[in-house]
Length: 247
Image 1 (tube, rainbow, N blue to C red):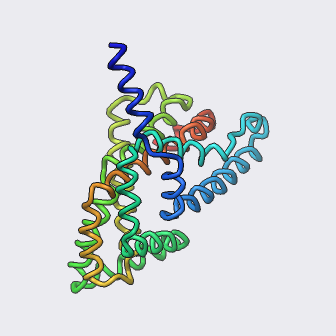
Image 2 (image 1 turned 180 degrees about the vertical axis):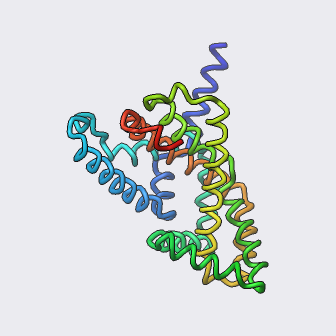
């Protein structure tokens, strides 16, 4: 038993993604900028809540922990070889173009994205494009990855909020299903908008790339890391979370 435990620990230590690999990934994937935006966004949220209830400010969460926990998760949940595969995938110019397009589209309002999607869906000649992009979104943001956000972030928030212990399993299950469905639809719309300037040929190549194991490893790890990074902050908000307003 001791030998097996030692072997397991050594394997995890020797073959986990290295800090250098993670830093490289954060740089080329634009994740470092997104983390900075998350820190700023949730700092504003925390400050707004403190202005309403100053006494709660005594337990402010250190937002710098978001990046630290995000990196920690990637290092422990991706192997060195898996991270190598992901970094290799990012040598593909088309993937870099997609990542850049997604980053730029994040500054677009939800209304503008919805307007674009509706105009696209109303054009019968665009149906093939819509179906192809839907496949890309489903492969890049599969339900297992999206479920991590609910299971590791939303569910603990609900359960630790006042009255959370009274939420029955069926209600929680329906919330989980609704959250995953909502997130999947959001990812589909955002992918449609982000790829609006891509040719059909480029989309076909992107769809093939999205099927690569490296992309799936990345998606699951990033959603898991995001949930892990935000978990402690969300738990700090649990006492301020009014379940009655989110039924």
